[in-house]
Each structure stands twice: as structure tokens, then as C-alpha cells.
Image (cartoon, rainbow, N blue to C red; front, side, top):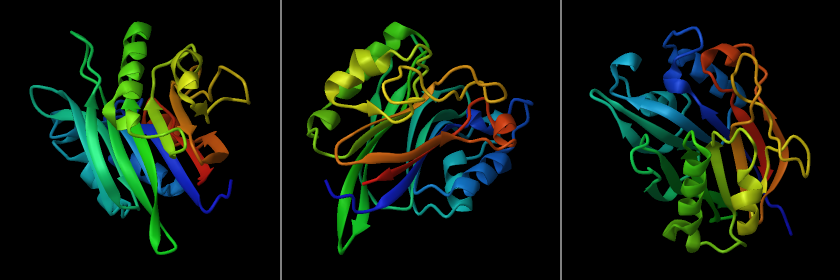
Length: 250
């Protein structure tokens, strides 16, 4: 296998830019993201038009502040005023995008945002398919949601030889999704604390992390080189989750 480039991916549940101090401060989220300067940024709990976030379009605001030329937004949960969901911000063109409904019966609406990122290389482009997810709170709900992702037409059209990442806030406290779902589909977990471990890097709650909820699964011709959580003091305050930063060779 020949690795031809290095990319940085970041996943972050920004909690509507409302910090653990209860303050709505998108400037803190922007400062953290600017520090890591990821090529591809996956955000969850991104508001649009909600009173609690000054009726702002957070995805647009953050993308503009950080000079992300391309973005895709999937709004999943609709409130009386405003909505929120997942946003994928990237410095590379997006060739395809679709929001996959993961809502289970009466539970809160959830989604997986699929984007095909076209990474320019030597006059052409290398495709990287990314599924930006925010899974449910119950184990049964999460298992069903991962099944839907893996059996979706979006995933079925990909072979195991295609570069693919599934990442975001999985709410998987016990670290069971890898062995129960992703391993059989050929995915490895980049956010394991060490090879073979079921436990992921701890990211929640941000001020005193005890759970590895924010995970990155990958397969195909990509390889994690360096994966870590943010240790910025600002990140302990800006959201209830810590961002995860992963450098990949592709």
C-alpha cells in the first residue's frame, strides 16, 4: 500500500456552542477549531435559527470564520423555533452528500450525514467517503442506527477497498459498537486507547472525561498516524464534549 498524502480530521460535538458554564460563546468553538486547523471537520449539535443560539446559522458562521470553502449540513431535530443537526466542513470539494435518517420510532430524531470528499492529487482527485453521525442514547437504538448505516445504499455502493470513515458522537459508553457491528464490516477504531482495546479516548464530560463517546472508525487505504483529544483548557469549558483530532495517511 502506498500512502500518498496526509490529512487531518476533527470530530466535535459542540453542544450548540453553549459551554459547561451555560454561556453561548461560538467564538470559543472557533478558537479551538482554528488551533487544530483540520482539513475536514465534523460537527454535531449545530444550531440553525434557534433562540438559544441567537437565531444564528452556526455551520455557516463557523465555516466563514475558518475559511472552509465547502460544507454540508444535515438538520435532524426540529424545534418550535429553529433546528439542529450535523455539519461537515472541508477544504476539499464535496462530490456527493446525503442525510440518512436514523430516527427510531418515538425517540429524538437522529441522522448520519454522508459526504464524498474529493481530495485533489496530481491533477485528479482521491475520494474519501465520510459518515458524520450522532447516535442515540440507548444501546438498542444505537445498534439499529449502525445497522441502518452499514446497510444503507450509500455504504453498500462502497467496497471494503474504498477509503471510508464513520465518525462522530456515538454515545457508546461501553465500547461495544466496534465488536458488535463495525468489525464485521471491516472497520477498525482509530480512537482506541491502544490497539485491541475496547475502550476509546475519553472525551465526555469535557471538564473531567470518563467516557469515550466520540469515536472514529475507518477502513480501506487509510491509516491513522496520530489520534488524540484536545487538551486545551478552553475546550474543557466551550462544550460538554472534547474534540478528537486524527491525522491520517491516505
